[in-house]
Image (cartoon, helix red, strand yellow):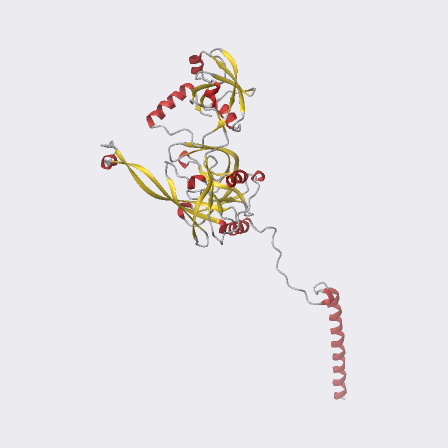
Length: 424
């Protein structure tokens, strides 16, 4: 009796287990069918999708890794002469040099940056990196690549006015790839700008900022006491330190947007203001340099060779002239202005039919002309109006010297009386 009850209980349990298992299978097939892959196979594992382009930091790091092998350091040996006082002890205490001085030869080292332009050994840098001032000359150029190779090089071509140069490496079979060049006309204010170079002889340093502005005109003082004006520069907040000059300014795609050139004078209170030569200007100038080896001085800006000043009340009295315009203060002998008959005391009222009211306006108008282009000036001269046609020359790369302090003070007083003078 007990045996048959036990048997019945086991049979009921077995049937219940079978029914329960069938029910669970049915539930799983209807509720978890989406988990299995095709044909009810287990799903395949996959990595999480990447965000489009990654973070800005990731893109900057990637751009630097892409371009860094093509960025080089330039070690330059400079031979020159300097005047050494015969009595340096007196000068140490601010006194005059007794017995004058003597010329002494010296050798110095300078450094800068550059980047690969072509597989055949051409490297782009600033002209001022490989063309020192004060009549000095470069006796040796050594290119240091990221892999540690040091290779001799020479200046292939340079344009001092554009501050660009090509340095040539011969017979080097491990040349890194050229840096890709972007269209700088498509740049937008606020986009990332990455400067790579060798500041203070530190091995390949990266600084990051943004594109801050366009078409900046900047006058940069030269070490030889002169100054040089550059037009159409790209402004960036990426720090550009000494030694960074000639290195690439790139975007987050690793493309060249400019060549690092200079930074605004911090003594004037400027911070975070750097300047670069735009990529499109670089393409245009390098194409000319490739075709024309040698050293060139051109600025590709118009020049007539006259010092100008805005007509002020004091000038009106001195010239016996009523009205506005720009006065001719000085004329360079043999210049286009001299050949056209302009004289000190003349007042330029119009250029190509447009009124001019300030020396700055007229100077910019002349510099914006191409060398060889003719400008037509309406001039007041001794009470008479006349039309003067002048064929512009090319503005010299280095124009205007830094005057001694006493002369600077005298000039400042004169400018306050007559108006600011400029020389186009």
